[in-house]
Picture (tube, rainbow, N blue to C red):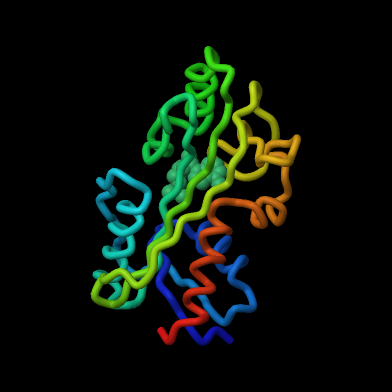
Length: 193
Ligand code: IMP
């Protein structure tokens, strides 16, 4: 049974499932906020946006809350789409098409997925903040149907398949989110919250 319950600042049941899967066996369980969760994500960095979401979850729940904010940063595009990853174009397929088109003139295909996580107390004060990164490159063509977002065009370093070609368990071992979460879980397990 979980002995630490933490609110996950998200409206996405898929995210809470994925995070609880990674946290299995730690005694920590994440639950979605009850009530309307509508943070205004107007920060300029992943860290700022994760703090905005964590504070909003603590405000509505009155409980210790964790938030993540993530995206894809492409070196030749000066870090774009970055914090605008979810809003780069209207649909997931249009976002991939736009990325491949904008990157077409460049030989440098280096990119990284970044995930910032912020844990706040009941009052919305920062307890801990971590960053996880997964480095790789953008492929010329998309491949694979697993995962979501930019997974079909992201090939992690040391692999010759895209993240969308990988089974979920394999992605969960190397993803920016799992790296950040494992750092955060270490902190939570070693603290007396
Ligand atoms: P969020 O902050 O986790 O909601 O992620 C914001 C956006 O970044 C998503 O809508 C995706 O476009 C992109 N993104 C974040 N994580 C991933 C991932 O693991 N795979 C593919 N795209 C991702």
